[in-house]
Structures are given as structure tokens and as C-alpha cells.
Length: 246
Ligand code: ADP
Ligand code: MG
View 1 (cartoon, rainbow, N blue to C red):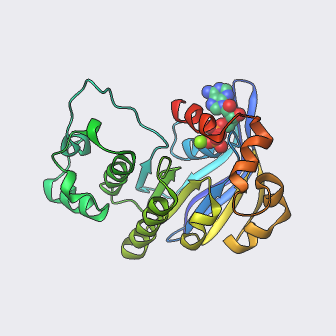
View 2 (cartoon, rainbow, N blue to C red):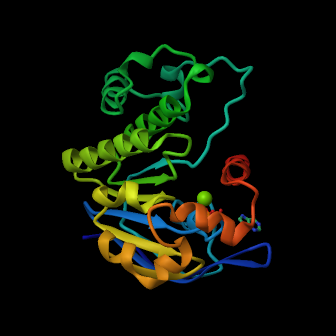
């Protein structure tokens, strides 16, 4: 069954066409990963799907009553504002204590319930965001570069957990990643985006597709080639930072 169907989606932002004629459907229970260079419209696509941005043209059909859990690319919390993990989970609305406990345990951070949000490490913070998304009991879980700031093994671990969640709850997952090779084993389908869909299919197929290789360069270190190629930045770290601030 289709949870979401996107037809001919075009999104312009400040006169710039961020997405052009994108077609995409998400079926119940599947894990779909979007890969693409910085600025290729990945977050724009996600934010249009959750309704935070409106499309310039095209059509998005959501299954009626669809429950979406969303893990944003970045979330800033005022460091002077004391807020515990449990209180954070009750934003924007109060959650049931047993549901909170369950969500934290599923995200593997049960021990952090009374911890201050501002004292969490990057990985712990992302897991708390993940727990908050799980509180929605999502039928579609959407994650925008949720492992930013985690190392490769931390990311791989996180993606395994996402795949476990899908297996346990049957939810579909739509996620954005910079590193196809880390998410390959957890993805049913990969979409390579660069303002439009360049290619899509099974992870192994996309990894070897010429369109993908053109964007990401050869080999597993393609991400670095991509930063240099598209942004001529001095280091990929600075690029990562500028994205974190947006
Ligand atoms: P990604 O998530 O793939 O890195 P984004 O979806 O964030 O890319 O951005 C896609 C493009 O749209 C980029 O070129 C970006 O600079 C541009 N963009 C994003 N937000 C805005 C905005 N509010 N106004 C104008 N351009 C924007
Ligand atoms: Mg993005």
C-alpha cells in the first residue's frame, strides 16, 4: 500500500529551483534512502513531504491519517535553557511515561531519561531525537542525515537500529544519507538526487550506476570527491559545519 505518492514535484526557493519534476512513492514497510550532494534538494524534499515547505507545482498525496515520525537534520537547543530528556520528549505535547520509557529503550538510551539535553553527546542527542520520533508510533519514519556527527561504526549501529524498528513495527522509513555504503545494507531502495532523480533502484545497482559515480566519484571515499567537486571547499569539515548551521 502506498503511504505517500509524489508526482511531478517542483519546488522553487528564492528563485532557485531546488527540486524539478520529482516522482516518488513510498510503500508501507520499505526503507528508502536518498543520497545526493550537498544542496541537491534532499532536505527540501523531506521538508516538503512533512508539509514544512510548500511545492511550486506537482502533487503530494499522503495516505489519510498517516502518522509520520520526523528526525530533523539538526535541532538547536538554547544552551542556557535547562531541559531534561524526559521533558524534551513531552514537546510539543505531553507523552505517556511508559511510552517515553519504551521509546528511550528502543533508541538505546534508557539511561538518559533524567539527563540534561545540553549535556548529551552528538550521538546521544540524535538517539533522543529518534526516541521522540518513535513516540508518534510512526507508520512512516523520516530521518534527515540523522547520523551527522557520528563516526562510521556509530552510524552503522544507528542504521541497524532503524532497520530493527522497521522489522519490529512494520513502519516505512525514508532517510537521507551522505554515505551510501553505510546505509546500503539497511536500504531496500536508494534514490540518487541532484535536483531531480538521477537514478534509483537496489543499493548495489545505484552504487554501480554511472549517474551515481559521476556525482560521488569512484570508490567508497566518494563523499570527499563530491565536496571538492561541487563546492571547492578547503575541507569537507567546513562544509559539514555550514550545513549544520542552516
Ligand atoms: P541538501 O539537503 O541536499 O543539502 P537542500 O534541500 O537543503 O539541499 O537545498 C537545496 C538547494 O536549495 C540548495 O542550493 C540551497 O542553497 C537552496 N535553498 C535551501 N533553502 C533555501 C531558501 N530558503 N531560499 C533559497 N534557496 C534555498
Ligand atoms: Mg540537507
